[in-house]
Image (spheres, helix red, strand yellow):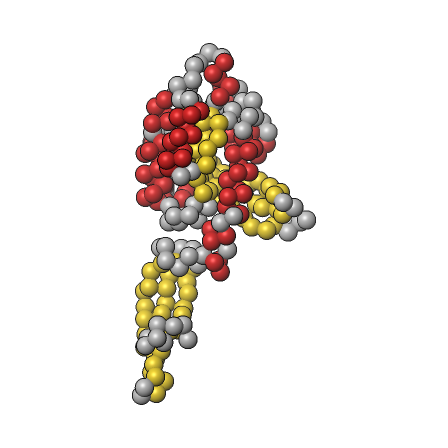
Length: 233
Ligand SMILES: Nc1nc2c(ncn2[C@@H]2O[C@H](COP(=O)(O)OP(=O)(O)OP(=O)(O)O)[C@@H](O)[C@H]2O)c(=O)[nH]1
């Protein structure tokens, strides 16, 4: 089992300090940095990890974006081509949960693919027994995720709880949605732009149309259509 079945791009978004970089480090290296060793992400960082699911190997490139507005640049390029988006909030910071709607707006603005798999992660559950009290209940997190049609999990980068499961669930859902990564079955409708049509006349009563389309999903396509029947020729 050495061949890579597919490569997926995942993106981590959410308010600064919710633990995106810590979750990623826990997932890729099973490591945890002490709070005084952690620095805010500037721009974007990314890690590559392979994952085996049902005896198949998948390569993940995981982009970790800055939560702080002033460190965010080239936002649209983060989203381009992403098949999965992990949205993180801190269960002990209600504001980071309430900001999820802003992150959804950004996702809608920049993600070209309506099928992109979304997962909401409520991070830092270990803190509920420690110095900080929880400000968002699991029930509330779940209800919000259900309303937004996304996957949901609670996690702790510190204790490992839920971290691997979050990534595995996202990848499984992507695998179940081949339109997201198989070129031949990518939808033609979304983000497909017809940019040129030419009519080719074969004889006085038969002509065909060549249609050139550009799509972020499929690259370019050229189809030949009988304009009378509307069928591909
Ligand atoms: N107790 C606890 N602390 C956490 C957890 N995850 C992250 N932290 C702490 O939260 C702080 C912020 O973590 P980061 O991983 O840098 O957060 P971020 O979302 O990547 O922040 P930006 O890069 O600014 O967007 C650090 O002090 C981490 O140690 C967790 O699961 N439990």
